[in-house]
Length: 191
Length: 191
DNA sequence: TTATAAAACTAATGACATTAGTTTAGGAGG
DNA sequence: CCTCCTAAACTAATGTCATTAGTTTTATAA
Figure 1 (cartoon, each protein chain N blue to C red):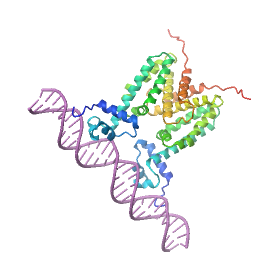
Figure 2: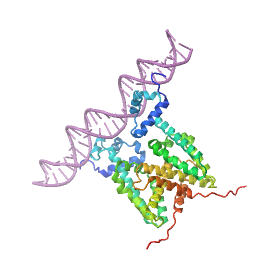
Figure 3: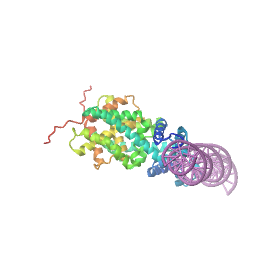
Figure 4: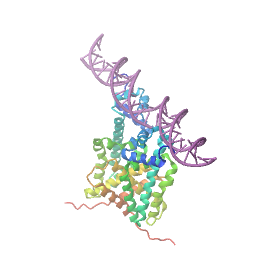
């Protein structure tokens, strides 16, 4: 190491802070360098490109989201787990709107990342749905619907598409309940 | 007029073409000018800024989406109308993925635009839901869930989050049916 | 104490949006 | 047919970026 105690981790965290504060569109290597107290070009000793750095921030974000979901799910059982997941998902997106948005741009950049990180959410969902939906294909359908609803709601809300006075929190809970209401415990006819 | 037969409409359409081909992120005034056969700075005789131009492209996109939805809805009745809307929504997004994405960035730019254009979709939905949901607040909740599901599905699919072999088309139809299945015709107890 | 290499630096390039000021051409009025 | 007017083109310049090449510095390992 040289002069500063800069590590890739510090750079990543500072980049994430900057993005959280001012949005991905307003992020610049110049401002990141300034905040770190170095010249812009020095950043390239730590990252190959801005694109790679942004991808890394996205990976960290999806990893944090997954941790939050796992924690939430592990504390409940059955439908309560699904409800807890939905609440944790929205909570993460609400507290980290800019980082949440970055998650969507990951897959197109890096095919492996999503396989590594994103599947936790999906596999968790598949497991939780098993007591309610026997057929694998149907489980996939429902999981996609569930994720779509969560993501879509958050996305539309953040883009200010819900102008009506009615509480968005209420609408979200209502939406999740509607979806969960279509799940009925199946009698186990195996063996 | 002077030399060329350029109109704001031609510029708008060319910009939309360019965005459709290469994405909003890769759009540049330089390339737009080149395709139009003029110098970059000449564009500023027709638009105040790139931001305004992009906003106009977004407005045109939301307008086209609304037209497609209205047409689809008008040809059916009851739940079939809702199904037709969902199919038309997805169809638009599938054929115009880049333009669809731009719609989401409109509200933050211009508060009036969405009130003018976007409410058609919302009001249409409210009307269609009236035979099934009496309470206004409940209708708002359901309409938000419905839009969230549609948008979320399209958004996740386009970001390549549905890696499973299972058909995305099937999943989409399944999702819409799940939501519509929770709607039951109410007996009209008014008067 | 010295060698090494990571990590800082300076300097330069090329893409980009945007602005100011100038020129040109096509249609309106005589 | 001529002349003016103005929309719409142009040239030139500025400032912001990301990125690269080449140089210097400094912390640590030997």
